[in-house]
Picture 1 (cartoon, rainbow, N blue to C red):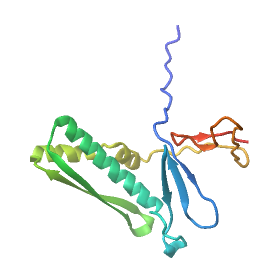
Picture 2: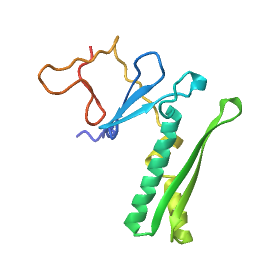
Picture 3: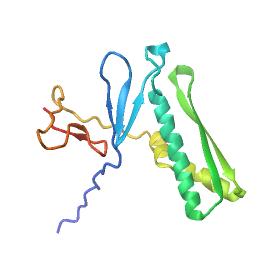
Picture 4: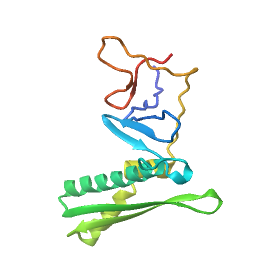
Amino acid sequence: MDTTTEAPAFVRSAAAVATSTGEDYRVEIRSGHHKLAADEPPSVGGADTATTPVGLLLSALGSCTAITLRMYAQRKDWPLETVRVHLGYEKGPEKSVRITRRIELLGDLDEAQRARLLDIADRTPVTRAVRGGTPIVEQAHHGAVRWQHAAGSGSGAGAGADGQEAGRHE
C-alpha cells in the first residue's frame, strides 16, 4: 500500500496579460475582463498616460487591504463606514526600498474593533504576497510566441475572459 502523499497542486486564482507594442513604454493590461494600462513618467522616457507599475502594485495592496477590512467588518456587523489606505513607495540608501502604509478606519468602532481590523490588514492576500516575497516562476517557451486565431471558432487569441492566455504557441 502506497502511503506517500503528493503536495497539492497550485490552482490559478488570478491572471493577467501585459502587452507592450511600439516604441513607447505604455503597456496594455488585461486581467479577467478588465482593461488597465501602465506607463512611466516623462522623467524616465514615458508619456505618463497611466499609472506606473509601482503605482499598480500600491493600488493592489491598498485595494486588497480596504476590501478585506470591509468584508471582515460586514461579517461582524461592525459600523465601519470608510476605509482609506495611504501608501508610499520609498527608496533608501544602497538601493533599499520599502512600502509605507497608513490605514484610516472611519466609523463608530471601539478600540478593540480597530485593533482587530489593523491586525487583519497584516494578513490580506496581497500583503502576504508582498511581505512573503512570493516566488515568480518563469515559464519557459521555445523561440518567439505567436498567437493564432482559430478560424470560425469565435474565440480569439490573446487573453481569455479570465485573463489567461488563449491561443496556440508556436
